[in-house]
Length: 409
View 1 (tube, rainbow, N blue to C red):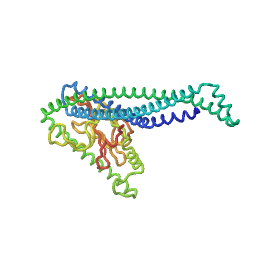
View 2: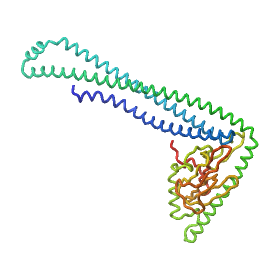
View 3: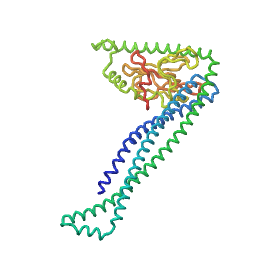
View 4: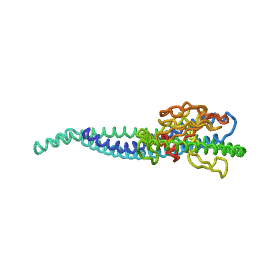
């Protein structure tokens, strides 16, 4: 048997093994990337909680941070379980391949043993020579000679094939041992995460218990927030209405349509560009975690109370900057008593609104670029942290910012 024939027999085994393992490897890489992202989010939320705990005061945002931490850790545990299941699949695949290789190797060894026995019985070179010389003609003698020659080569190739199969088998056994070891590591890591989760749930129960003792203050704060949010929403709607009125007046002077929200070619290009980047826009802070989501949700502690959120709230470190998520023009800087300053940026018929600035670096009419710092966020003394509130409007329609800003998973 030639070396080419030997490779033909061994390579299919390697290819069959490589296909499912390659698919599993790609899935594992995706899970590991997601796991890394979740671990980074947990690490950052831990830093925020650590700063909040230094104040020795419980707050609503602390509870929101804990809720975020718990949900992120639950997602991390689920990701780990998916990774463990994938490892178990790989263990089964490699185990089946090892069984096949061992069976093939046993067959090869049996064949080789029979050849050795045959060779031993017919080891007399005089008998082989007489067998060749007793041929009826030259052609038959040549065929008998080639038979002995090819038989000898076949034995050598069979021995090489056994050696190669043994090498592949040893590799697969070593791979299986390494995969099993990685599974043990994952199971230990999962157990640690479950212990941390139990600890965080206990902390949450403690914070909820303390906040229930502040129900009167929470209701008052909620009412103040609601009034402030309504004022800002009305102001945003007024500003947008004014922008539409100005656009219609400009369109009328130019002899164009006055319906809807008329835009210049530049404004339309900016609007289209903003829309095309949905899901890829940067965050309005360089670092942070979303602790309050868009829409109507039950209040974390007040029973039967619903909270309406026109945007998202992102917890970040004390005194961090807030930045523009896309290029555009500053429409207004709004000042709301006790709520700080609000910056509104237009992107054609899209508007982004950024809340809770202590100090701003821009004024109405300024052009801003993507990721440009707009100002310094307020710091809450009770929480030792800052919050960025982001809203996105399409004319007067409020959109969910989570669907617009970049998500890595």
